[in-house]
Image (tube, rainbow over all chains, first blue to last red; front, side, top):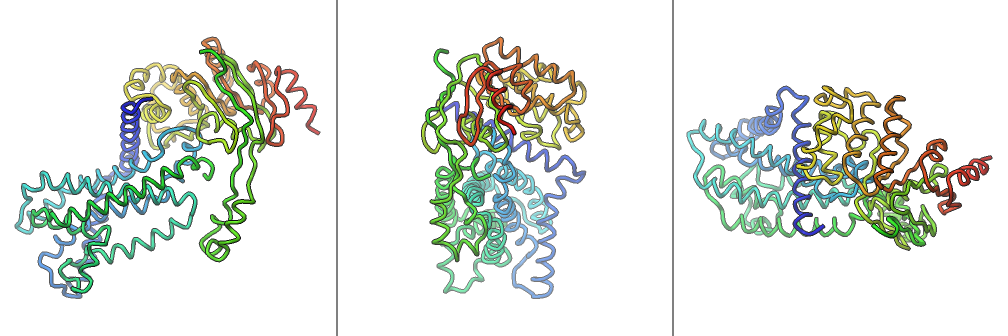
Length: 257
Length: 247
């Protein structure tokens, strides 16, 4: 097979697998779409009560602020939390058929990406409810940020899915690490509230610059070029690490499953 | 195509035993030096120094006890495993005949599963769409094809899987113990399809515990015992020797 053929096979395979993921997610639930936005909305409500009503955090329109960070975070966290089980869950395929294994991981990440895209109208509803409106910069800002996040999420998921085959503790470890990442990422609070002495650490954070970029885009219609650049560097680095680990180990998948 | 379709040359396959690492973080951390050493020493030999060739149009049977290395051999031909030493060469498109349900998703309909499996097994979506009608016809599932396959009986599932593979135009077909399922008329149909493949020059590798099927279908048979080749030859002779060896 030549390069173009392989690429189109990869694309078709990913498409069919993504379609399957989406269908399976919606099929047996009457309120399919509602469930996929109910989760971040429920979190937003809980955080609103805890941090604004009880703890009186000084952020304007806190619910809107939360939603603009929580929706992109949900995409990242759903994909990453599901990733250790991806290859394990497809053991019977991997042991029998020769096909590019990474497409299974890409399909789950794309499925979460589709849900994120579908949840954007909810952000619009909240913007309007708070007397604000979507900005024209969304037209090019959203595709750029989605691409960066896809790179970051696919890289992380590929790494975790691969490593978990050889080191099954990864699954538990990921659950713990993700709690850390969530609270150390400015989702509940704004990056301006971080004490100055830790401010320089923010650019070393693989997820924070992306979430900050999402929020300035969705909330203020501003593409924060510096943070977008930083998150692109992180995403590219993580993608290559994930891809290299996968490349190095994928020939042994059928042995360890 | 000329020359053999499959060539195994003094091939060995061993797996490192991963238990020290997979047993958990605690043992991994505290027993690390030991774990590394045992990784090198402890290996499980699945196949030892195996050589054989399969020729175009041939139906090649593999028999042996459980755990002898039959499935590993199929995995090496399918290209999902790579040899630890020696070499394997395979010409043309290989198709595994999937075990019941392994490539299927319970919640999807029969038709959706056809698309999923067809693409996984190497067809383009276009090709699957073109063949969908004849796949459904072959499977005799009728209107059931638009029902989720969790409602199917095991015989219906087998019919679906078999119909997909029958429409893949493989050069080499790998069959791992499939004929045991389905009702009598389906089994008859399977046998007929295999005969059809045979007539059309498809090379088949057939793993089975049913000596009747092996002698009935195969041109040559390989008996694997203790992870190495015990005997290769005409079906009757090999099967007889194999049966004779069982105490």
